Image (tube, rainbow, N blue to C red; front, side, top):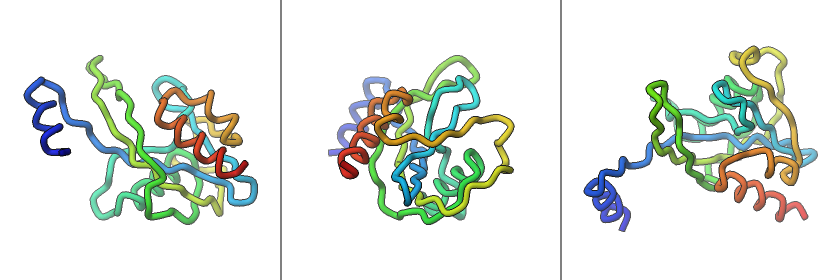
Length: 150
């Protein structure tokens, strides 16, 4: 079915979704989630990026969490969910992207990390994080966390 859907999208001129990986950074003690601001728009997002050669998908998500949020911990190898968004390009166009999300149980939170000067990071309860993010699919993932805690 996926192949059929992909073929139809191509015939209709729709580009297939590109895949990114994201880390949903969790504080194991409190259940809070860590959000960071995006570099371009300053929106609240989870650390995410493109798959990397030599890394598994969850491994790449953990690497993004370090680079964008300065956290290290235990990454879960099973997705907690996926969401889609339109990634703005420098050319002014946007491309559809699907993000595979992996929970990362934070063990260390460093003050100094590669993108510290470019981003803000802040801990939120899942309930507080839901209105902070723009992507409906990410809101759904956060809502699921909120329900499992309650």
